[in-house]
Length: 444
Image (cartoon, rainbow, N blue to C red; front, side):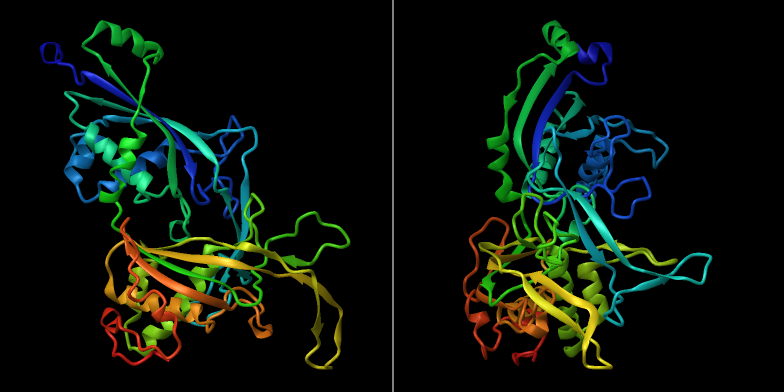
């Protein structure tokens, strides 16, 4: 019937999806708030635009341009091929949508200090401290995807893309290198409307046909889709750690002036941005010692667009590290010292509540990069050996990690253990020097 009447499609396949944010999700807003999230103009709630979902899925097929254009459409060659896919906006479920606001700073790579920029058209200089807002991990959202096709031509491709989203090969929104945008499906229903049948055409009018769950089938394909290299450094805080949150909870006269950062659900964490900054700085130092070009680091971490230079995304991803089996220390009183007089500065008394506990630092490399893997292993080892601190207060013993093992695995395979704990042994000469392109001598 489809061929007889010249139909563009004979099947409409509907995918009804409920997904959960595994990590924070940042969808940039358009209301001039630096670091704000996108708010729906009518419903006044955070949401994910259909264009963002479609763009992420389309980009996954970047290495298959012909298939990409046939499925998502293209007007580049003047043919103005229409898209065979239609996607709805994604809305978060629940009466309350938890969001997080975290402090950030831009670092000048040359000086290692907080970067300042001259304001456009003036003589003033602006500091680069800002806040980044995101929807909290654990939030649920729903959306629909429709595929208009003939003879089930593109179903396998769409389900491959959905599998990549489930496997973590596709991230949504921004701040991808800081671990944001990973989701997993809670429910995935597939409904196939055969438009050559009158019954299905009537059911399509109200979208009332019952669907079939394909979630378990999709999960079974993940092992063939995940090709990233996963690094995990496990250990515990040696004494205590403090990465200051933007504010304190339940503010009153007894509240401390600064406390450890928490997730929206109250769990203590070390943010991915802090881990990323420390490890990148150490990797740059090791690379400089090994006389490796700066471009090797930029290729891994990416680069912002500057003036006439184009920016590009990196291939490394960091994740928040949760503090488990621990908690907060009692408030600790401290004072500011006037370096000229040696006395206490007026109003210089303050209090802090650092935290402690076990943690796992996770880093992913998208592709095999032997130099990057070697530099990252050495930097992670320095953190695990308590040489490289995280957070603030390192001069008073805070932020040092007592590492127990360093695991490496590719995709969903079992972790490689041949360097897991030996790499954290002081004095051990690194067996992976061939990865970093260096000699077998320790880099310190």
